Length: 313
Image (tube, rainbow, N blue to C red):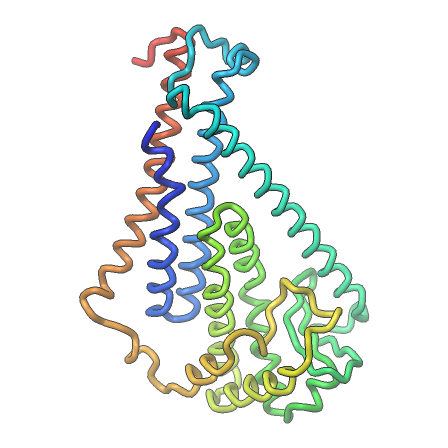
């Protein structure tokens, strides 16, 4: 456990750049799944490692040792390292958990407030009387496409349909859950914060492609997104839009428009031998993180049984 428990804490610093590089070579939907899965997997392993470190230090204290009926000191970690490492790990878990709960409460409160501003039972589309252009997908039961009168005036009829198709794709794909996964992971390990922006971009690109398919015109979808972004560029998000929702005019819009106007994006993805090694490297990182976390847990369990005077054969 002395060495293996640290691997899940260090692997994200290597795995995150690899995941971001790999996401650039994949279609948007696959990239979103990759980034969300990597974030959750790495967060789970690093949190488990912190928990094991905290537990190993706690079991050196007489109170916790008596609860486990330890007959001998637990030697999973050296004495000079056990208490400082355990205190640090417990502190990190406590701070991360507190930040996560606060973030969840804030986001839920914002979503409830946003739903409260809408007319109940008005269908999928909800129009807010607001001169500032804005449009976003509001998750919930039911999910709603929220658009202001200012945004409706800024777009033509065909562009509105493309915009609605974009927001509908967010709701249908439950993209808010992907963002929630990234937010959870970011609170568990600092390196995982770097996955939030590329994940949000992949989700917007996925919705862009769905909108283009729905209206049957990639140029129209690109024009709708570009005009929506230009209309809302000088306007700060209003109080009606929760910070956790996805909006068509958000993110690096020029890159998104360029991707929609690209008739053959697959032909421009890297196909070098080095690019083919990236998936294997990311898989290796995830496997190493999971395997070492499991190995550390098995070592700690074996150490507890030994300290209890039991045989492990």
